[in-house]
Length: 553
Image (cartoon, rainbow, N blue to C red; front, side, top):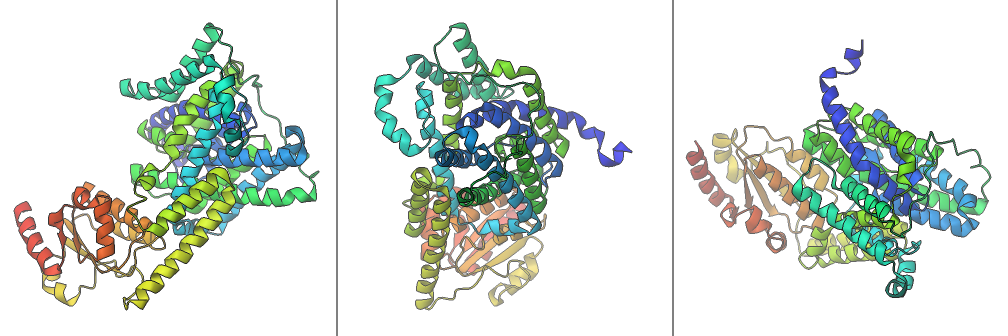
């Protein structure tokens, strides 16, 4: 009977994968809980609930879910806002938990309404600027705890308190934090069998404990099962509902994007296809249950998912085991965790914050269209020092306006502006007919029309994935692509990289000035596509390919 539900051949890999993912998630759950303002316990409760129920109900079998950096940053902003409105954390808990609950409910609704299909329309500069801003928030908010000082509630508050770093710092905390960061980076160079974050957490905490360092600690973590905490959510002032609605929507949208991006990574590693709508429903259920017991919300965790897959996890049981492991830790080791210094958690979060920052996008600021660079910088600044919600809203609106202006400019110059189309390769142009008939089993010709921008990049990627296995070369005809934005640039880079990794030759034909200039500025030409594989005319590419194919045969 059970064999129809679960193939026990996968159990060893699922158990190992889930266990390793749980070990990786433990220190991060504690750290994110502290950063949220609700305490390490809330991070652990959230990791357990989301880990178990998102795995059971979600649409990505190998996904390991739990608190993540972006979700924690939004949660911390909510906690600070709710405390400001109600005076104390205890008085604000009903607002906070109802927001977490509604955020999960919105995700479930998104799943049923197929909202996942619209996530692909988020422009790259907006996502990049937002994620970089989130990374900066994590780093900036850890500066004071790293120095053994009281954590601030916002990045602006950290800047105001910055002078105190030089007069009130705790030398022991700084040393311990530095040791934590050093271990975090050194361990992977020695072995990748043990998660570096866990090694850093244990070693640094033991140093503090046995040398009796005078540094701030996490404090008491209750053992045992958490209590149901939604009993008083109906005693909320009417003025708080705008805050609740605002942050619940942000948590739902951000959690959905965060999870689906991780799902795509899991797909690429396992060569499978996740169910986006079911994934949102599973994440929403996990976040609702986490809220019911006082846990912070989360999403699909990239690091946990990757280690789960690499350790052998193949089914949703692996993600469930990851959550059950954390539950076992809560039940048995809660008191030990109370001795962890806050500067150690800060030492773990600072590298994680830097990893979230999109250095690739920032590095190319001077090489991509100025409009994309402007949007990325603006969104990053507003995210870091202002409102997360305003940052995304302003970024998307501005990206759309700038793209419409660019499309209008192109039209005024008499250029054809259409959609990326004719991607199935079944309609050769007149100058391709004879070559197509002779080499159609080995060579695919893709025709691109109009600007390659954020609205079409996902569709373009999906179409390329359907290429027959026997194809040895792909010609991308870009005669009619007058413009390419940053989203289009990185999509093209990913596609070319995947095709070449699969042993396929990639030929670019008819590049116009702006797309070619961008490809050369970021070194896609010649690092990824050699100059020998770039042609002005289709005839020249045919001569080159015929010779290449003869050599391979």
